[in-house]
Length: 305
Image 1 (cartoon, rainbow, N blue to C red):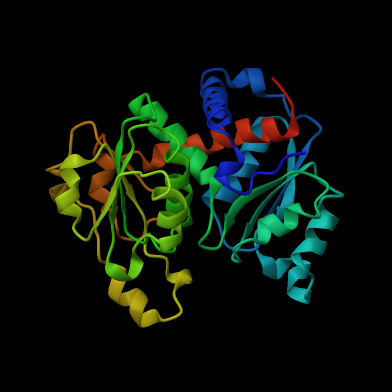
Image 2 (image 1 turned 30 degrees about the vertical axis):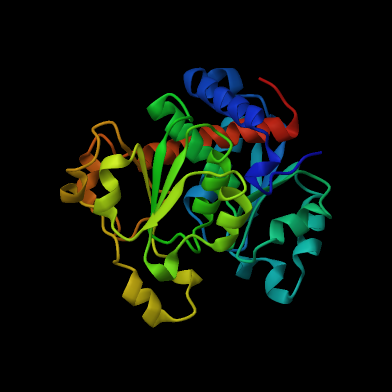
């Protein structure tokens, strides 16, 4: 039995295999319509979510399986004081696989220690979000044709952005990757990402505060929102939330083939008139998320189309 807690739990070959399977699902959905018949996915979301939770549920339904779970910790026995470990041991009696989101870093890892079924980390605090990373990799692969030889800029909340941390970790294993981190001083990429991932591999990166400075170099621009729920001080959030706003004027210096990603939800860091730009891929990301999660569920359940 395998779990997915961190993107590094998958080898590069396994990631490439999942991308290949997801692309086959996109081309031949009917081939996979019964792959998980009789199987159940539980979604345990101790933290609010729209895309990730519904994407997991849609993925299981499109595989012919069923879903159960909760979307708010207040509606579960966690509100009575039940531990995550006990909740998972109970739910793993009812389901074949669990997708879990939790505001505390490490909670899915702790859950995996006691679960009878595979655990998928659907986001833990500001730490990791491996299935969003798989979604991002599938999107880049479909748009660019390759995951090597890219200059990618991450812009916004890089300190608390678990999607950023996971994607940096994943891309660090491909060749010819250059990172540009665009953030105010208060939201810079954490030292642990540099010390554990970038520096040991001697990966080229630089940190800047100007989006315009980096724009002409980028093959991919990964925008993020400043996350109100990660701040202890609302004044700091209000001061930083509008630091970077992507609009058509800022895109004037970008390459025609550059692609814009965003894990969503957005607040106002990308103006709606950017949505019409052919370089905007964030709603394609949403669709791709369902397909890569279908591939992942099949892999962890060891089922085949």
